[in-house]
Length: 251
Ligand code: ARG
Image (cartoon, helix red, strand yellow):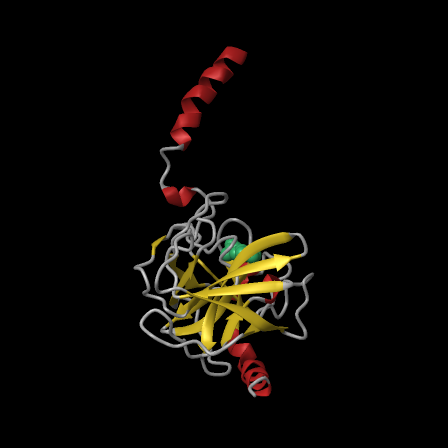
C-alpha cells in the first residue's frame, strides 16, 4: 500500500509541473514583461521602515507628486522614475527622495480601508519620453464590471519568484460580489479586479501601482491573497482629497 502511494506521488508530482502557468495561483500573475518605457508614469519605491526595507509601485500624477498605497508608507522612501530594469542603472532613470508622505488620514491598516498615499518629491522632475504624468479619473466616474484594465509592477511573478523588469497584465473589473468573500472588502473605497479563470492578478510588491482603465488610473494595487481576485483602492472616490492635498502642499 505504502509502495503504491509512493509510486503515485512519483507519477503525479512531475505532472503538476506540466499544468499551464495559469494554474499556479498568483503571479503579476499570468502577465508578461512590459514593453520598456511604455508606462512612463510608473514609479518604483524603495521603502525603509525601521530595520526593514521593501518595495512598492506608484505613479506620477504631477511633476512633484507620486500616488501610491498607504500601506507602502515607511520612515524613508526613495522614488525611481523612468525605469524598466530596476537592477540596472539605466540612463533614463531619475532617483528622487520623497520629502513628504501623506497617507490618507482615514487609512486603517487593520481594515485596509482608504489605502492611498501621496508622496511629495524633493523637486519637480523634468518630463520626457521616459518620465510622464498620468491624469486622474473624474470624481465618482464609475467603471463597470467587464471593463478591461491593465496593471503593471515590479512585484512577484509567482507566489515567490521575483523580477527585475517591469511586468504587466490585463485584468477585468469584477462584480463587487466576487470580492465580498473577503470580509474586509468595501465597495465604496475598493475595487475588485482580476481574472480568476486565467489566474491573472497583481501580486506582492505590486502594491501602490496603478490599475489603468482607458488610460486612467482607476485603481491602486492594495491587497489580496496570492491569487485573483485582487483588491484595489477605488481612486475615483478620492479625487477631491488628492487635489486638495496637492494644492495645500504647493509652495
Ligand atoms: N499587499 C500587496 C503588496 O503590498 C499586494 C497584494 C496584491 N494581491 C493581489 N492578489 N492582487 O505588494
